[in-house]
Length: 442
Ligand code: DSN
Image (tube, rainbow, N blue to C red):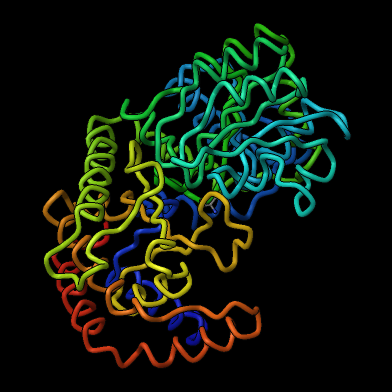
């Protein structure tokens, strides 16, 4: 391999080994998944679907794709699955193209309240530009008011209600969303990208009985390759018998060309791994770890400086794999805290909290436990990590981001250099490295 490229990949491998990944959408795929993704299947073109391809030489690719489809159908107990979408956004695009005409009304949860760009974010996304998007947010306490959702659906009569979370820590009431969709004749699309592994482990509510279509990425809590799936439920087929065919046609030839067969193989492998008692144990531990981390962050640490000894969490905690820290009581921005934590080898992401208007300069950080759980960490480690986070936040308690945009950029540039010399962050980084070495990346 080109030495420069080889070196970059090796350094990234070391970075992953020696840091704590707390980004809730990241995880470690098994060696078997990575081998499938790096296999010769990547060399083959296969436009079409198993048994009906536009190229010769696809008998084995057909078997691989059938394996992935059958495993998805069995694991989620659905009558139809498409494993070809390149990732989550293309999967959601395909669903909206299959169900709607341009200008039709779609309804979803705002990005700043924990939804996703593809759920109708206005102005800047296809889902907000090609469709008439209506959105709801969360209440002051960070929870969804389902009565307001019902009223919005009644007033706007959307053709599709698309629901899923990237930064909403609490469990969704899928039954209620199903009833709301049914009451206005809308399709309910559940985007379970973040929580799919938790649903497999029965530690998060399942939308399958209530939604018509379920989409998911395959690389988050599922621990597969970067890809996605679209599943049509019994209820979806009951509403419209040709829904599966319409979804398939929207994916290919509607939006995509040749499927990434190497990714399809990685999905088949990930579904094989997910259909095991070990996977269910991991899923349970992800949520148990998140609850401990959330509680410890809220209770605070004796190691931290006052008054920063506690952190405020949106929604008051978590019922999933993730939590959202509201840094407004600390007068801090997500940018400053995420940067400081990275210096301490704790990798998270700055994140909008409800009411934020700039996703690039938000008032929160998002933390999650899937990756550290995959490494084998448990409650004891979560308590330590919480102490380190609180201590690191304490180190930057006076670092206020200026109001104007140019000032913010200049401040962050200077801060990033200056923070390198912080002794406390260096000390935490050393402890994190020791912990990482005790829990190797699989
Ligand atoms: N980018 C993903 C996340 O981090 O949540 C959502 O698609």
